[in-house]
Image 1 (tube, one colour):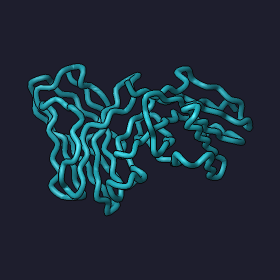
Image 2 (cartoon, rainbow over the protein chains, first blue to last red; image 1 turned 30 degrees about the vertical axis):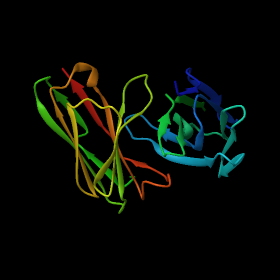
Image 3 (cartoon, one colour; image 1 turned 60 degrees about the horizontal axis):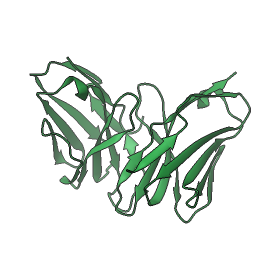
Image 4 (cartoon, helix red, strand yellow; image 1 turned 180 degrees about the vertical axis):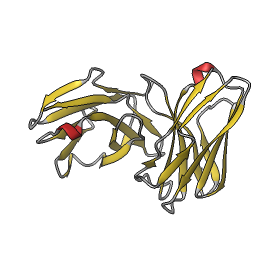
Length: 111
Length: 114
């Protein structure tokens, strides 16, 4: 069955360091991969989208890589800040625009 | 704020009640979505509307009934729910349905079924 795996354990990172989150998928052929941020009691907020033919995308302190051979995306936050603490969701969309989400990874940036 | 509002924010209902969730988007978008987010499970897409027409129903039980009277409003009518339907129900909108584009989510309705 189609599946997205994200780090199930919370990730604790020291302020100022780079946080790296992983998204692996199986039995899916994505046309796009997206990363969302979700704070407690709020809906997800779109951060970045990367297409299947793109290797890397950047936006300010965020960087996403996409390796369709490894079926993996890495999401990096450089110079991390306590305000970056949240749950980060990975989502895949195929060519029929069907979207599936991962369970998310909780990130804690420690001051 | 994302431009997508949902009411109520919290709802407690019995299994025999009938209630409705409301979503409104102020972004001029043409596509709207209902999602269910249960604890320790991924976000699940329930329904998709494009220009007020339902285009996707992901095997959702009939006790959930969506309605889209215009492109700015989306409802989810609930009746005879089960305790396992307790979850966060999220509404989202996007400019168009295809090709895929950024979705804007509302804050959600936290539903508890007793």
